[in-house]
Length: 525
Image (tube, rainbow, N blue to C red):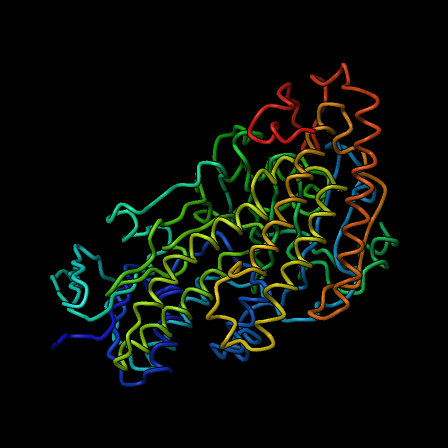
């Protein structure tokens, strides 16, 4: 049949532009149209890459030169815990790596990254309608798809064999076709902003005031994704090229109430200042006006992600949680898989089985990722012992199951969505088990008044993660910490519940009398 285009992509940010770029590389003669609604990209909630998404950007998309010159390198994750607002800075618990990260990672300004990828897609031969508002679309399978949009005040229509939904959280197809499903088991919300005037983490001042802090770490703390943790919430602190700092809170509405205040920016700033680590760095910081954002009910997914003639990629198919920055991982896997599928279809191959696999595996990947890493995790976030055990086991599992394959054979690995097959089921079950146990231990600690008791007076800096047998060292470290937490739990059981539960103050400084209520309380054992 005669179509205007072979593929139309709605959405020109990371997932849409990456899909277009990969499709043109696999099928240079493909006629591709990108429809982007915005005249300019805005900054996204996530601005930190993982080892998997960094591999996709460097080895598959070929962005090493660009990322090195226009974005900041990332030096892993760093976690901070406290047990009262007036706690001295050098008494707070710090957990993270001592040395430079072994694999590339980046702190990215998404607006700049998205613009660069879209520029590459255009240079590869893709047409672009921008700014353009899609007014309607028709999905007719093998008979072709039709999309209409308003561009420069005039209505335009394009027909194509395939159409890709890369509209991000707008999730155009999922909502219009009735496949959109909010994840009500994980009621998290986010508020974030960019700040100026944030104190430097590695300045000479620290050597004068806290020499042990300054001398204990061999890498730049400022280039890490620093996290502040409390029961039911966490705050990210991410540096951006040019000096701005992105900071935001993600919280579980079942456990934590975001503080009141005149504006969102002031409320976020006040919460950060209520934390002893946050206060050290944000005492004189200023919220950048007009750059404050909020989202409620972050997680969702689409019940169906493709059919003959259409497919979803990236956040249009689903989103779980910003912790550990999995968003760009999903974008990487889905954009590469769909681009490869469409390239085969345009060659004349039958892709019905590939479509069936994508529809079948994506919900499994989404559910497995959610249950093994995030379900009820916010119940134990404020306890340094429990969260550090989870960090070691979570990241070690991530390196074993995902990082090693993508660096061994990227083209093959990105065609296989995570948690597939027997190995994926085994990993999901193991991770699900220790996550459930940590939730149970957290609830026991909370009702006995022990929650966050060890959020003071120690620092754990380890060598870092590498995708080989040396991972065993970090796994053993995580298992030992988990076992110690289980032993403490036995002691707490023998002691019985504390009579002063109502007076317990969590590690974020928020008093509550509903210690064991909520979805996580059923895991108490």
